[in-house]
Amino acid sequence: MTTSELSDSLADTSERHLPIARVSRSHVFRLIIRRLLHVIPVVIGASFVTFAAINLSPKTTVDALLGFDYTKAAYDQLYSQLHFNQPFFERYFVWLGNFVIGRWGTSYTTHVPVVTILSQRLSVTVELIVLSFLLTLVVVVPVAVAAAVKPRGLVDRSILVTTMLGLSTPQFVLGLLLILVFSVHLKLLPSASYVPLGQGLVPNLKSFVLPAVTLSFALISGYVRVLRADLVDQMQSEDYIVTAKAKGLSQWGIVSRHALRNALFGLVTVIAINFGTLVGGAVIIEQVFSLPGMGQELLAAVVGHDVPVALVFDTLIAVAVVVLALVADLIYMLLDPRIRNARTDG
Image (cartoon, rainbow, N blue to C red):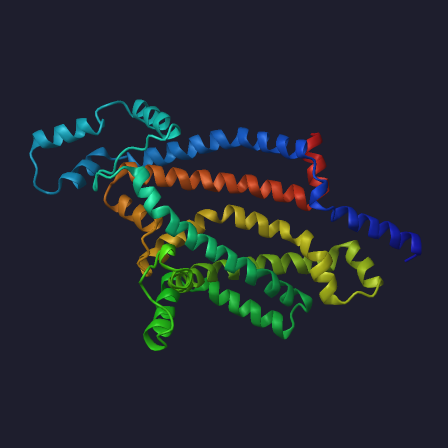
């Protein structure tokens, strides 16, 4: 390769790694507006599906709330009180309007406003998800890079076996196993004692260690495999890797300094679309470790036909998933100027 070819290739590589500071604010704003125009119908569609599923059998809901012993008069009164006697679409649009303005109703079973329940439960679930996500990111990148430096080597094979084990192990089984080892035998960590943040940072974090590890283990396994595969593909098929090798860079330096950024697209996509799975895993983990979070409340609401709570919680999760998809789109634009130009000029 000639000196001019090396220069051209390096220029192309540097263009693909433009600093984030050069992203135009107007470009970002236009992208956000376009994505928000897609968010609105998606959220409405998700809320409609949720509303239809939960309101599929009003009779079952009334039966669950009244119990086994009730009169027809009591049944008719509650049926009318919950507005099940009104047309389905009328009830849906009334509920949607109330949801938009924050009038989320009152729990059928506890008679507590849904806003109050959410404020009590949200912090626990958010802390669990954030800690699990941070732990995942801290582990995934160095492990995937270590696996991709020497494909099919001993380290790579060991990591692939471990990640396959992580993907095939049910979360509740892993959680019970961690409780047995670290709580029952070693007595290092609590198994089912949530400590609020206001009672101390260290006790609070200790109460989240086992739940966060349990929730993140399957995520780490999946993300490592995705990022490792993309890194290996970059190393084998991209011209700028050939240029870096021609300059005498080490394999580790090529993977971490050049291939990593271009391999992040697949990981960002998986993280964005996997948020629903993360919340679903939180439901299980909160049950295993007795954490008073949204997942535990959502499960109780679905089982107990507590329609207002289930509707609001499910719709908020749908909104969060769509917002994360928007964040992923922005990250794509920041990582690659070609995507930025294509989306803002088109």
